[in-house]
Image (cartoon, rainbow, N blue to C red):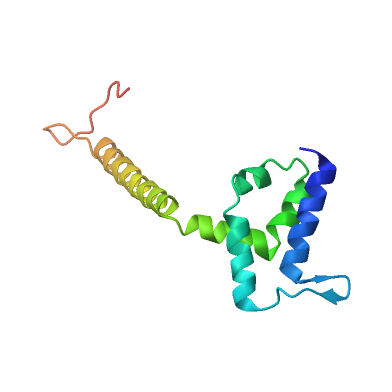
Length: 123
């Protein structure tokens, strides 16, 4: 990624978020028009991938702090697949914790018929 182009793109995101260039206010200050602009930007092909491809960490931080990029991320997270993925991830985590707890309880409470702790190879 060309650093000059990346810097200009982040500058453009900042201009759209602020709604002004220098002291001149743009006409996108209205809520509905601003939302339509953000929607069109979020629908650009590979916009999230392009943001992730920025090499300079400062440019990534600048881009992430703009209202436009925050709106794009919000729209992407509101789609069905991230929510489904988070739900499945949470269920897997719950099952792993439950299985680990059950396995460690069985291992620590392992006794033979005489009440003594069994020793031996557990692995």
